[in-house]
Image (cartoon, rainbow, N blue to C red; front, side, top):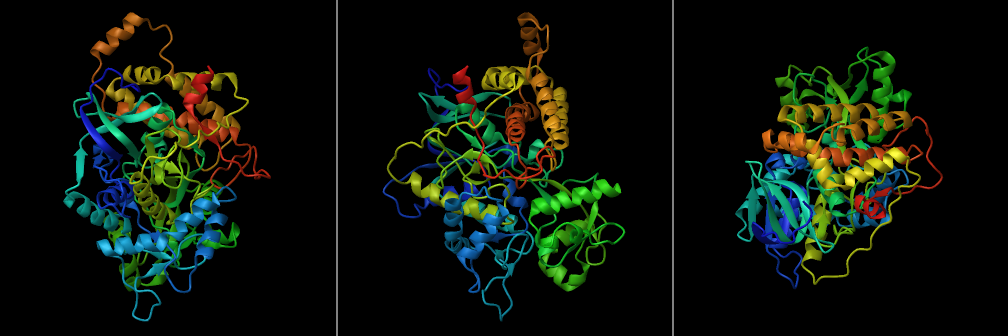
Length: 568
């Protein structure tokens, strides 16, 4: 499904943006308003897929990190980010993003985002909180529902803009490629039929890959659709193995996922065992304000050592009035589930939250596949390194999207150079698996061989497998076992003839949401596992028991399916 020759497109677009989160909406407005002024006017189409119409940004609670207060400075924010990234950050990306933070926030204020005001005697007019890894108070927020306030404001402007066309109820399947350039997008409608949307430039703002794991912090986390589509089309992916697990997701086995913001710890929340012991003092001198990877591993260690289903986060010492003021959404949600956080601790567990890796891009979102751009969580500029610092993600969405808008408004430039794959000394079975993955048709056929119920069950099994073998702690043996299992799933059942396959396809239902999610997940999950298996060190979010120490030199991982396929 990656060739457009001799196929008539369903529609023609200039700039096609895929994704309805903060990055996609910001880019749409930047292009439609021609901000900053550009010599090239672009027509904008925004595709908001039905499965993630508002993007993961809506569930962001804490806020946006930016240098705003007079007592803060760019160098401090840069230094904190580099420390959290554990030696793998691209310092140029860090300085670019932090250096443009104030203007991005001023743009949002001008649009009308309702940030929480500060007290009258504060040095900055809006309240700034502090989160893990930050040495200063620099998180601007809208109470404890910043993502919702941001998305509501941006969406209202986008929907009212005469120069933005919005497409909905279509699901992205694959990138259309011709003559080595992205030419648009294959999409699936509600009936399971595919069509091609032609585009001069295609921008992916599809979010991360937390949906590859059994427990995630948002109700409909992406399985890495954009990353999977990009690598099948020929783009490079970078640092996939660095998957962040948020330390504090509400523990409620019978309810939907709900994030407990890092700002709760920033305002004095304490992590306790059920017996009342404050355990972070046993793990890190920064206590509850240690970076997320440290806190998540500490919680996991406590749960394993003491046989706990969860730990507790206690914010009651802040006082009822302050809790209701700073955390109204969390308080209301927890109360609906029988927990009054003004007086009782919150049961919490770690859950998959953010992908630090993704499609390798420049600071403006340009990938190394001509015509393809990526912004936000789906992209990897190197800003986050081996571990994202709290609230830098929404900032990246804003800054990178605005930079992408500027680049798309300029005359075409030379294409990005191809990155070199870092995969080496592959085991024969892993090389064979890559060969299968490089054949898009093979993966699609093995997925469509399943009924809707079978596809749903297989997706559930894959998520359980990823959580078990590629979660907060990993091992070489576990990663190999997971790769072996996925290789079996990707292969068509042994002994199946062409005739029986044709019969099965003729009687099978049309592709549904679970088929599509499984198609994307079966491409991306083994690539994440391979990158983790090849990283013989522990760094940041990647902790592997076989190699508990970092290597002397930090090194990015790069993988591109098309490069491997060409070699075969």
